[in-house]
Length: 162
Image (tube, rainbow, N blue to C red; front, side):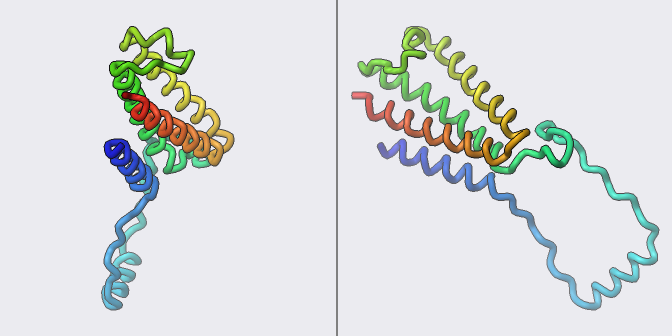
């Protein structure tokens, strides 16, 4: 129970910490520094602005950018899937019975169960990315809902272990 509460706190900090983008500000220069900076700026030749480099996660145009909350939600979903695999094997090793009919056939082979979990995780993230291109809020809502559902599953698995 305490271990699960620690995990929940860790995930909450992960999501909140990475979802909010903060940036450092330069110290405000004194008035004389502002005037001298303006004079120097007029005297120098204009430089072309650097073009932003494409991120491997960017979709292309600025209208299709990924919301900042999605990457931490993806990361927490992956971590919850790993915890689900651990909690499932933990409970099964202590005499619990798998209740999910989709997983029941894989409980004897841990590698197959891990591969099934990995495929399911990739599928949810893939669907979320497809949804994001049309509705960013829906993609965030989908990932929040799946994270909440997986948090419940993990805590249920740990409680089910005798």
